[in-house]
Image (cartoon, rainbow, N blue to C red; front, side, top):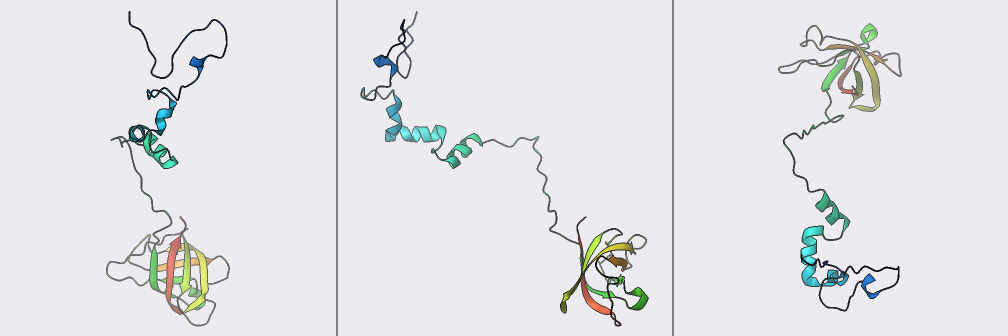
Length: 175
């Protein structure tokens, strides 16, 4: 039967609990089979290869080195980045002061629907900014019509003035 010799230290049974030389690491034996080998430069490269470079980043690189599997699924979402927006929107006067008219041209359709929340801004007047909810839209029956009816949150009408507003910017926010 073979003799088992441990790689680090030695196992010598004792019948009583006592302090023995074999209970401690021997840094003076020069054999390289003890705790002091971590300070040897030629051993350090092998340890870095196996355990990382003893930094947090090295540890994470070693334990987090997983290969992607075919069952992994990545879902990319750009929430709150891309908004529906229109330029050169006109606002009516009088009884139509909560009606916005989107200029519909080639390749442009009305995609604003009821219950969406919108922001109406006037580039010529930065103080004019109105948040509103859409109550009716031509987008349901005919997307080619650009008429949208809104109710503002903080005022009675979008356009309280006697003249109509033109050149407004409208964009949908929230969901």
